[in-house]
Image (tube, rainbow, N blue to C red; front, side, top):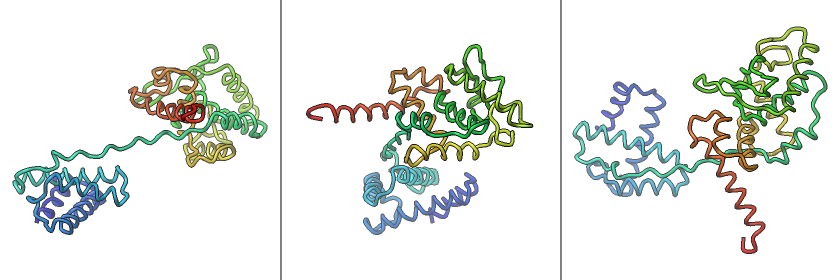
Length: 294
């Protein structure tokens, strides 16, 4: 059977994991069940691109996501390449099959009014812990840095004179991010309280836990989630949402895309352009509310 030879090919030549092979088997079984039920055939030479397209439409009507459908199409492409290589089919119908486009998810972000509420009305503890929490939130929102970049931010990376911080991003690429005088003053006060309130602490890294240890992802994630829960009901409340919030608010307030790209440390402008969709959605809402025929 072609299917059995194909599975052996995935297992011994491609060396795919058992989980991946199981996914391929499931996709193939579903496809062949469809061809048998709707076209009364399981002969691979009877399968053409129109049959595959009809299966794609069938999957869409069943409510499958575009990503799931594309994975199944990928399975068929791999399968037919194998069949062609083995001389089991004369034509590859998948050459005429175009996978449906995956719609980009708009980045989730917190509204500006909610961020103002977070910093102006939410109460933070007195002393080191409260100021540390506020500084973490302010740094995320003011610079758009990643979780890993914040955790690894060293005290010597803060330039108080130039009002900048140096972060180590992906692919060990360093970048300099400007910060406001307000952030600089916050860092100075935080460092003073850290030395005053903690008996021992890691001096290398700027931000530390209540016990003076280097921060870790779960600690920061829970901290951000806890504080954002006080001001917003959005489903995601993570450090990365604050990165999205920074970029969206910058764009909404007139910053150019290239500047945001540099601050975020994106390798390509295409990664930054996703934030323009949020801006367009905002303009659509304004137009709808303000225009007589909106």
